[in-house]
Length: 173
Image (tube, rainbow, N blue to C red; front, side):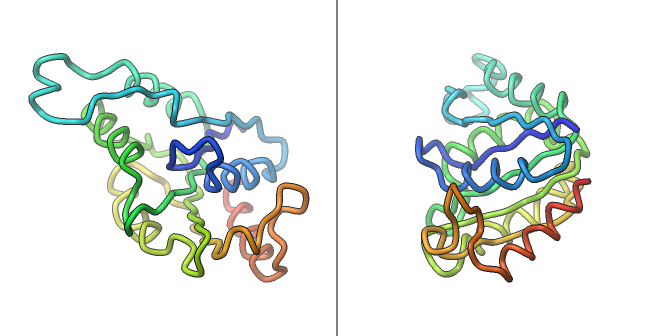
């Protein structure tokens, strides 16, 4: 199984990217592509921009990556209760190629943050809209207080949260 794993952030130290890659790496026999959103240099979406210059190559590349994988593990960064600007822009541009952005691929949708709500607001936004945009949403997971509950060496340190994540990951197998 080829899994596209990424965080909805352009931070070079994205905790969401770390969580997405950790979770994808736990799927048995998976080949994981670690996607860095910083590779997509896109103008801010507007109909005027699209009319003048067409769909940017970065959005076409992103859509091709989705198409070439069997599943998606995405962990959303929460910026002021919503998607990060970079993720939303890429999502908007890609929806202009095909409204089935996620191409009916199985998806594990997650969020984390340094705070106790673990990106709960943005996770709810994704749960509400991604299925309408072609996501086969298999499970969701929120990891609160990332720095208290996760380490690169041990993964999720809290036993109950770790079990919840394992259950979510198993939906992709």
